[in-house]
Length: 277
Image (tube, rainbow, N blue to C red):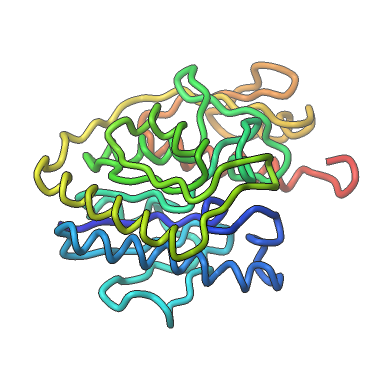
């Protein structure tokens, strides 16, 4: 049983502040160890629950955050950027996926809530429902017939996961107080919680087997902070402007939808000005 861990960072143990996840800061250097601890706890639980292979796909920012020298040596690490399936690369060969260190979406309550862009994107919907990175990535997993086994992050992320991955287990390592504050479990307690949930998730997955692949067309809507961002993104093929700050597109598959979303957010970010956004 091959499991892929998509490891983001905003939802990791102890993380509450932008500097905690900004590569190159002293706070990021410190929090890398906590992220690696969460990953190791998950790896340990997955193997205890019956996994035979675990691939950790770095999914945050530069995608070079996990300390490989401290990684459980039973796992392998996919590190670095520009992967064909991005945050979900490796799911195509997996029997189950864990979304570790995830967070709520732009415009929502939750620790470091955002969707791809730290600023600029204020609303995201898929097929008419409010969406975040987790929902978008869960659709990619479903397209490959891969179930989401476990989601870790703050309590609001775990609550959101119940809507887009109702069969997944959850591990809340902190309770959100605001976008930049949380009541956090110490690393030892986080590790115990994640390990227990990962063990149970892997055991259940082994008994249930994989669901059928579910490729499908999806409709995406993105609302930006300012009108000029929507105007810039309108240049992306297949995208239409549906409001002053909103664009929309329909993709034939969830993978195409996620790729187009990445292009849209990259263009929107490049159109932002230093002081006016």
